[in-house]
Structures are given as C-alpha cells and as structure tokens.
Image (cartoon, rainbow over all chains, first blue to last red):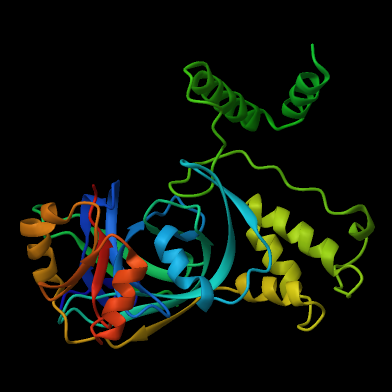
Length: 158
Length: 188
C-alpha cells in the first residue's frame, strides 16, 4: 500500500490513510472532467465518479442523483443561489455523508459528513468542492507518468 | 451618465486600489463576453469557480447593534442575513453567528447550525467485494455501446443499463445488486 509521510524537525509520520487511481482529463456523462475520483454518497448504496474541484466553493450534487436523494435528505428549508459556469442555479445546502473510495489493498476509505449544495438544476457531474468537504481532509494528487498511475491520496486533517 | 452607472463607479472608487484593478479587469472581461453574444456571465463561486470580487452584505438595520442573540422574533432576519453571507462566500462569518445561537430558537436557525457546522471526517473500512480496475477495463472496451445510458458495473461485470437512473436504481435494488455497484452515465 502506497503511503505519504509528513516530516517535521523531529520525526515523520504517515498521513494518508487510503489511495485510489484517479482519472485525468476524462468524460463523465457529456462533461469533460479534469480530475475524477470515485465516491459514494450516503444514503445511496452505489458509488459514482465525481469531479475533484478545489476551485468550487461547495460540493454539488445535481440532476438525476439529486432526484434520487430528494426524499432522503429531509425537507428543503431555504433555497439559495449559486453562480456556476453553466449559469445561476437554485438549490439547498444539506448535510451529506460522502465517502472517498480506495482501490483494493490501498488502505481505508474516508467518509466526510459534508455540507453539500443539492440542486436538480445542476446538470454537471457530482462535484467535490473545498468548503464543507476538502477543507477538513488532507489530500495529494500524484499525476503519475502513464495512464493508470495517477494516484489520489487522502487522509484525515488533524 | 445614468444614475446606476454613476453609483457603480463610485462603489468601485471606494475600493482599495488593488481591488479596483481586479474589478475593472473582470468587468471588461464580462463585457467582452456580452459583446460577443454569449450573454452576461455571473462572477461565479460554483464549479468550476474562479477568484471573484466579493462584497460584504449589509446586516439588517435592526440587528446592527445586537450581538446576534437569536430570538424567535429576529430569527427570520438572521436567517435572511445568513443566506446572503453564504451566497457571498462569507461562510466563516455565517458559521460564527449561528454557532453562538443555541438550538431550538427556530427551525430554520437549527437548519443553518446543522449545515454550516464544520465537516467531520472519519476513516472507514472499504468494501472488499469489488475491483474498480476491472470496471475501468470494461469501460475502455464497452462504454461506446451504451452512449446516453446509465450503467452499473461491479468488478468488470455489467449489472444493468437504462436511460433512466431512477429505473436502473429501482431494478438493481429489487434484485439485490445495487450495493457496491459503480454507476455513471456514458456520454452521448
């Protein structure tokens, strides 16, 4: 299992708890996605690809996935707007458990009780954004040299 | 000069010099997009975001001198302000306000307390009955035959396909195959 270390003046310690191959410059649905990782959105039982986007303020679940979650997230309390490259969309913030998946033998998964913007108006892929998700984990991308060698490492930010 | 334009210019003049330049550059960029027929584009904070000038929303007049003690009477005003803060990327400030308000003041304040709480991460054991590398190989070989469809894979086996995610989900759930599947829509 590949692991990453954090070195201080006194010692070094492993910080990554899991890793998985990520897809670079790929297609999800009809969208071109720069970095795609695999995740599972609770309470859905299956996993799906997601755009890892450090430039997005919030994680976003839209379209068909949002429709599947509609009755499982509790009633919408307050709609708010989000400006995206596809235009302004309405949606609600919800607390959603999102799990980053590992490849076999590559450590443990990481589940984040995250704040996520859920909007059926969003046609793009599932997005893992900074606020409410990436801000509380430690992660690194090894872009590799050949396809299949791009590794996404992640662990708890303590 | 129109009143609106004059107000906009005065607002920009009131900004620090470095911000004035950034705002002017963005306005020119957006204006250029509009001239080319693409319509006015909003400065965006969603996927995929970009650095944008932000403006702090004004707190409601009646709450300006209070220390944000939530009461059933002012709960709606606080929630309106929290919404504006969140929409304008002042999430840390919104978090600070709602975290100081006790639970039970209003349903909506409880909602904001919940959704603006810091995310919590935990390590969990992986499922062992799947091999995503086999899914990747399947996709490389076969995805082209399923353009526009949602497909479900598990360790390189196709569990099902459908034009509707809801129908695929329902079918797989009924047959007990949904757990651990990898589901996505093939581009058309």
